[in-house]
Image 1: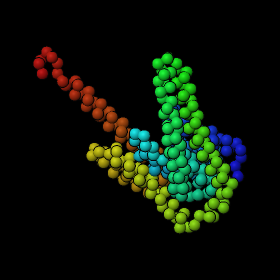
Image 2: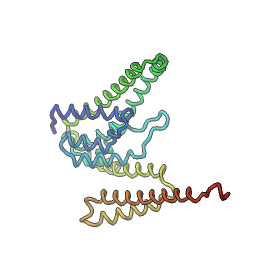
Image 3: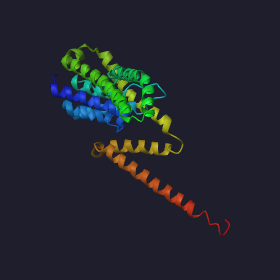
Image 4: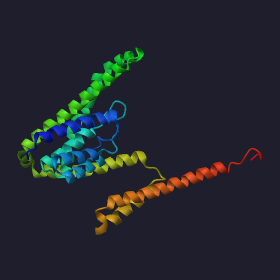
Length: 266
């Protein structure tokens, strides 16, 4: 499948911005769900972009950096999964599994930038001591530019290569490998969600978890409700959360009001 030079440039620009957003803007634009939608719009397949982005989001939802250790990069991985699914016509689960090596490249890129910028921290301290904010800004702009260029180059080069040799690449993948990648990609989203639950769940939350799981089975089993199922469940969840917040607020207010005053000695 061939793509125009405008689409290639847009993919590079979007990747460049997402790379900076992950560590500097912090607006969550880099999240796979958002990037999948944007790349899908650029490449002309919004539906596939949303499916792949959502699948990759579930896989990475529990990933987080610990100290200096970086997890497989969600920016490069999510964008490449969408690019592979659309340009090569891969099934979403296969595309997600195939994008893992690219996410590792992104991880290495982040580690490289962190290593290169470490010696400049003493220079930033000197700029701070000299009351020179422009110098600190230049260091930050340098790191953001380098990170964006590395991410953009990785994604764009493999995008061009995949779009040029797409049919040959797909035909070269044996059936046993594609089936294995599909199974691995389908499993990864559950692993990611399990990691998130490990950190977030406590005894007070298990009831809501099982209730949500049951509601999902009921809603998805009704044909008229299956399409807007996610929106319906989100609204139900928001309603329960808001009700719980109101109840907790009232209880705290009642506890404060019932403390008694100093006059009666209670």
